[in-house]
Image (cartoon, one colour):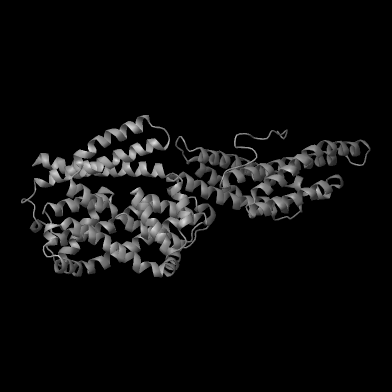
Length: 542
């Protein structure tokens, strides 16, 4: 009996490992396609639910779909009600695992056939390149899932006739509630509702538990998945917390509905196909699992807007909603993380460039208004440092480099405003610098407008022309100032201050041009820009 217990426990372990490996492989193969598909196809709660269900069924991971949806809400590409649709659909998509177990693992018993598939997957992983390596993981994981199911059956067979439905809580209201709690506990321990459902299907197939008892446990397993979701939201962004709590509320409501639906469902099955709950209990069970999730999605979708409003009240915006969008959960999907970094940096760029314009125009509060920007830039920098990419992600690598360069120039630009504000304020007060300063302000306004409209090519062109023009003018401006000092029109301290203002203006114009360039590389869909990251335009500003 000890050997069979080891088979049972090992089967659960193999199933968990197989699911994890297969999910990682499928996610790696999908790459940025998942993100683009979600953004393109999710036009409303209904379409979002369909997209979430299909994405989860393909990737065999609701977490990947959920994290992507949260990232798009943070980036403003999806509304919160649309993201709720994706999340609800992802819940439905997870039921495909049960069908795989019931139809292929228990009915066809293909464990022996998939053994060579594990070797093929391992070889592809070892010797493949690019996405082919992820395919190897997906194949190996797929094989391990069914080997795990086979081991579950071997272990469960030893308990056939020894462990019976009578050993579990009875099929009455208190007993079913106890079984729901057992299902919750199983999911918390295994950290996988799929593993719990696979175990319940194997047990009901072996006759160790009745359909009604297994169904009550599966209801609990659906609720148990929310514990993992809530733990994942700790320390996360407001959007992540809303998503996690929405998942809890939705799954609890669905569980209540499923609990009420269980007896009518069993009665209908027995009426239409007598003895089905005994002879084909695993199929009846997985059908019930899919049905109550489908009914839950259909009932909640018409009220997605009201549901989202409720969650907004329950989880209000924090003190700094902009930086709070950079949730650590997004790091699991680098493309989504970079999308959010781009969105945050575009807003911070607008604030910083507006502060530069206000400083040159002599606004006393311009520098004070930029104080929070420094903390926000530091937060973004810390988040970017945690983004790690895999080989072969050329576009993501290019965008990550652009984000690093962009942060550097934004922080240097902030330093110019914070540490040398008087040099900027003197520009329009110095006769020789009034005209070039006004021309720079005009180009700065055009750059800001182009960046706000996401016409990156125009922003690059305008800011680069201004930087090159000021660099060429600087020699003449310095000569004019020195001539006025020599002629006695300016004393030496005043001349020195004017020279410092020229240097300040030239440096600021350079950083603005680089900010526009790297914003284009980070935010443009095709990543095309005049100069790629790593090809810094040389300047004598040091």
